[in-house]
Amino acid sequence: MNIFLYGPPGSGKSSIGRELAARLRRPFVDSDEMIVARAGLTIPEIFEQQGEAGFRRLESEVCAELAALADHVIALGGGALLDAHNRSALERNGLIICLRAGPPELLARLQGSAEDRPLLAGDDPSMRLATLLAARRSVYDSFPAQVDTSGKTIAQVVDEIDSLLTPRSIWIDTPGLKHEIVLGYGLLNALPSLLTERGLHEPTLVVTDENVARCLPIDALHLPSVVLPAGEAHKTLDTVRLLYDKFLDHHLDRRSIVIALGGGVVGDLTGFAAATFMRGLRWVNVPTSLLAMVDASLGAKTGVDLPRGKNLVGAFHPPALVVSDPLVLATLPEAERISGMAEVVKHGIIGDVDLFESIESSPASFGSIVHIQRAVDVKVRVVTADPFEQGERAKLNLGHTIGHGLEAASDYTLRHGEAVAIGLVGEARLAERIGLADHGLADRIAQVIKRIGLPTSYRGDSVAIRNAMSTDKKKSGSKLKFALPMRIGEVVWEVEVDEDVLLDTLRGLTNT
Ligand SMILES: NC(=O)c1ccc[n+]([C@@H]2O[C@H](COP(=O)([O-])OP(=O)(O)OC[C@H]3O[C@@H](n4cnc5c(N)ncnc54)[C@H](O)[C@@H]3O)[C@@H](O)[C@H]2O)c1
Ligand SMILES: [Zn+2]
Image (cartoon, rainbow, N blue to C red; front, side, top):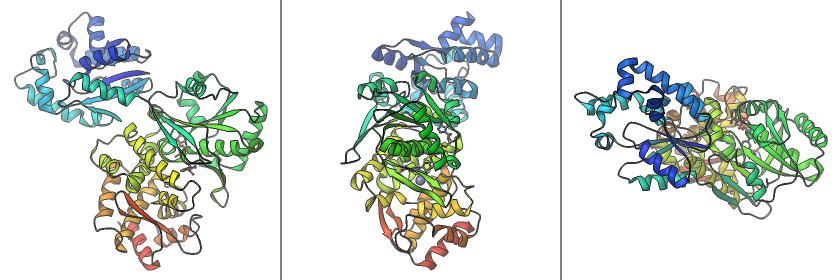
């Protein structure tokens, strides 16, 4: 995995890059130096003779070359990733870390070298820097891996990057469900060695879907694979039967290991087929969507839908290992990334104030490993406390009671994360209405959700939503039971709500 250092001028990409490369014993490359060597001119000379457009052309050529490298540390020019094509080429071949610092510190670090930087040269570098930062802020903000270099030495920043790169191991340590979750950048490439290290080296088969197979380098795993059609519509017993056939074709037996490589649909299907084929095969879950990383891959639930409802058939079947590599999110469609953030917010509300506040205040990026880890930790804590869904695990239903009603009432035109986002706001309003939560909680949640780009209201019929909620299989007995927030970080469950208050709250969600 390459490590690309990016960020505004003065953020320390080259000096930190050199030090990081030395620490990691990897070759170091500076994209600006490559451009200079290629053109035989200094950067100011290139700008003078060929204009900024000429410089950017050279830069794109260099980025294409950099994308073909492996295991390098690479410092990129501050404008290199303004071009979406350069960005996606590099993003698919490594981790981009955006280094940041406040304008005064950037300016101080640039003292004496502004004339070498054509975009900052002139009478008032401070003004020019401010203009450049304003124009590029949304791009710099959009990288999931951000490191603030303010007031830090190079060695301190290198330490921070080093810890960002170190895989973390999290355990679901409960009888009957015990297994490890490894989370780290670049782990997909390391999958064969991760499996071998854990003694999982029997014959394996990879199950994935057509989108994932197109986007991710599954051939590099050198394992036989089954590619399923993508989407919830295929999370059925028919697909499970097809998997059984493929398992038989590949001569799998009880020693075999099946690897689910995909979103929650592939994970649920493969896990269920593994749970039931020959009374149980070992399986490894490699979630590739944000939702699957922070939710579906955790807790050992597997299953499929029936025509009369979602997830009506299933089994608890813990994987031997879960491997989450946030780098794979680079190819996940934007709408899926945004949708997955609803579950990250949910986990913040359920049990991590710092996570919620970090989403509230951090740049609008998706897939930060820090956010993923914190969200995973919340779910792991809840699942460990209640492995087989006897009580506390109902907390995880936060946002989902109204959310499921919305999904069904919209005929599943709303994405799951969109429905959950509206559900989180609706259920927080409900909590305020019945005096469980302080006034203002729902607005605070709505603000975060809007900032992520998720909806907080739905144009539709509130009675239809209410009726659709009645078919929620998670209700016990005849009355709906809600998980409701008291405050950020604290949720209670099994709350019954007066029907009129519920209907009025739903009306509020559809009127706004
Ligand atoms: N078992 C559980 O505890 C649990 C918990 C929550 C949700 N779920 C289930 O998870 C499912 C939803 O999961 P999901 O949102 O991941 O849906 P999904 O598996 O359908 O993935 C969403 C889309 O993204 C594509 N995709 C996934 N990873 C990609 C990547 N890296 N690059 C490009 N495309 C990629 C998929 O092909 C699909 O089109 C539902 O069926 C839900 O019931 C299960
Ligand atoms: Zn969900």
